Amino acid sequence: MLKDIGKWPDHEAVIESAQRICSWMYNSNVARVNMCHGDREWHLGVICAVRRLNEEKGFAVAVMMDTEGSEIHMGDLGGAASAKAEDGEVWTFSVRAFELPLPERTINVNYDGFAEDVRVGDELLVDGGMARFEVIEKLGPDVKCCCTDPGLLLPRANLTFWRDGIIVRERNAMLPTISSKDWLDIDFGIAEGVDFIAVSFVKFAEVIKHLKSYIAARSRGSDIAVLVKIESIDSLKNLEEIIRASDGVMVARGDMGAQVPLEQVPSIQQKVVQLCRQLNKPVIVASQLLDSMIEYPTPTRAEVADVSEAVRQRADALMLSGGSAMGRCPEKALSVLRSVSLTIEKWWREEKRHETLELQGVSSSFSDKISEEICNSTAKMANSLGADAVFVFTKTGHMASLLSRCRPDCPVFDFTTSTSVRRRLNLQWGLIPFRLSFSDDMESNLNHTFSLLKARGMIQSGDLVIALSDMLQSIQVMNTLRKSHSSPCHVILNEMIRCDGARTFGTLNLKEDSSVH
Image (cartoon, rainbow, N blue to C red; front, top):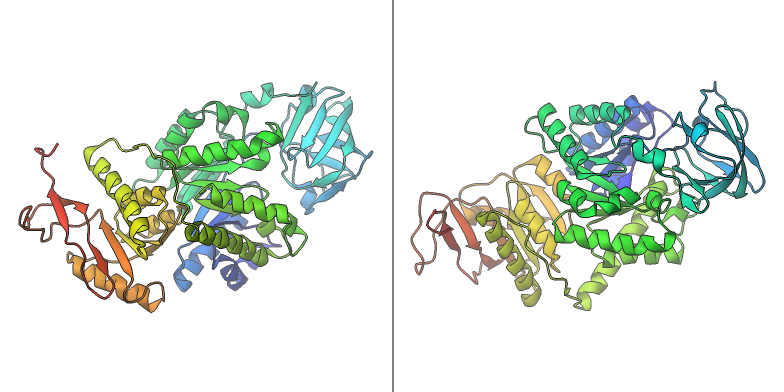
């Protein structure tokens, strides 16, 4: 679960209220810092607060920096949390810089060519239709608009304008995907060691490849993952190439709904979720989840069904935005999201609704293909035998990712020596990551993890556990294959044991040898 950290009154509130963030973060996996809001001091304060809580409380909450992008949007409303546009009111949308406070019913627009591009009679949609205006007059840098559909105006809301029922996209297509401000924000994120950088309004895969190269050059050895936000028509045209180039995807339904017919959003969401699953990329369903909880303590039943559908589609993560960033009850919104998700997942397991989705191979190298087949078989075995858990000992998180893709019914506990890998695995379906130092003795590692999880009440004696590893050195193998070797081996079938130590299967290893290929 992802949580948007909204803007608090001042920077000191972030540092001094770390305990409050702690209560929010307890059931969250990732904290999103939206670069559309706040200043550098604010962003740094949030990152430091999350890092401090990880250290003090033993959390592994990752930080995702969400770039603003180059699309047209409103200003920050002069510091106001929101504004209400009523039917028939005339508002001014302007590219001018105003002294605060803003003139009444005046909104800044971030795009200098806005007044030149719109025409009298055009429709102006805020956040895909949360409010609607008609352009009635142009006065230099100012555009006078009459509200035709009343609604709530939020800071930095997306703006689109339509002419004769068709969205006007020519100017947006000329804007760069990553703006000059975005590059400054990306440098900041690299310097602060964020875990994920989300890129807005991606049109081509080359943008992601370039950004990855940029990050690698600026931070050697960095594990920063690049996520793409699917929220525009241009993204849909090059969907598979963009997803392949990325490290993960966010389905940003709010902005997407401003560019495609509303009735197409559900099918697009399902298509993106399934494609990400096939390509082994984590996918986040975002935008307007439980949005009524911005104002009310209880969500609508339709919103609960919306959350349930995203869980049924087997998305990796769900993200709260408005409900957690500026809602009256952010803790309750997170609690509702968690409760609904757990309930539908429990129903899925109890009904034994094992999927019929046939996963295509995603690995290219021989060793990766072996790992992929191990994980596919492990998931089937776990479901068939009713295993209580799967343990994955991993250096890079790759094998854990492959197992997550298979969506086994039981929890998957991942053990890694890397703190950054642990945080990154937080984004993937069904994974419960721990940082752990390993020894060369697999029995010792297993006993250590058993003790750790039993002490936390996560497993108990008699539970059936399947153990996988992508980091073992050669250990004793079955006599029917060969004796142990000093060189590294690739694990083909790992141990299946019970927590009380009763072994069900031995360990089968295959020496890495060119003759095998």
